[in-house]
Length: 103
Image 1 (tube, rainbow, N blue to C red):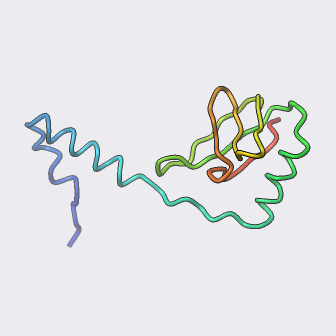
Image 2 (cartoon, rainbow, N blue to C red):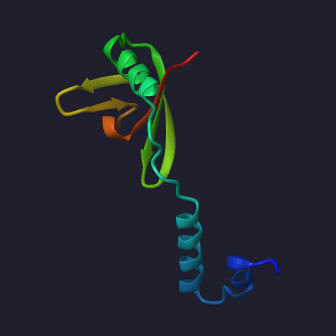
Image 3 (cartoon, one colour):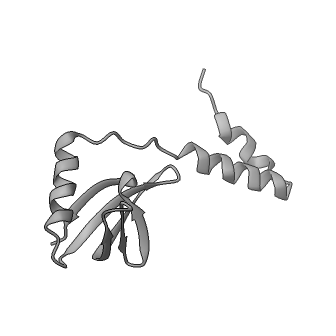
C-alpha cells in the first residue's frame, strides 16, 4: 500500500498554526547532512585560497542544513580566525564544501 505521508494532511489546513507547522515540517524534511570532503577537494580549496588574487569565484558552503552558493570576489580572508567574506557574507572555513574559479 502506498503511504501518503504529509499529503493526507494538506486538505485540512483550516488552522493558521497547522499551516505553519506543516511549512516547518516541509522545511525540515528538505535539509541535508553536511557532506564529508575528500582530501583532494580540501587541497583544491586551500590552493585557491592561498593563491587568491581577486578573481571571481563560486563559494559553496553548508548552513542550517542546506548547501548554498555565492558567486563573487572575496573581499577578505582571515586565516587566523578561519573565515572569508564574499559579497558581505561571512563564511567559516569549516562550512566550506566547495570553491571554484568562476568563468
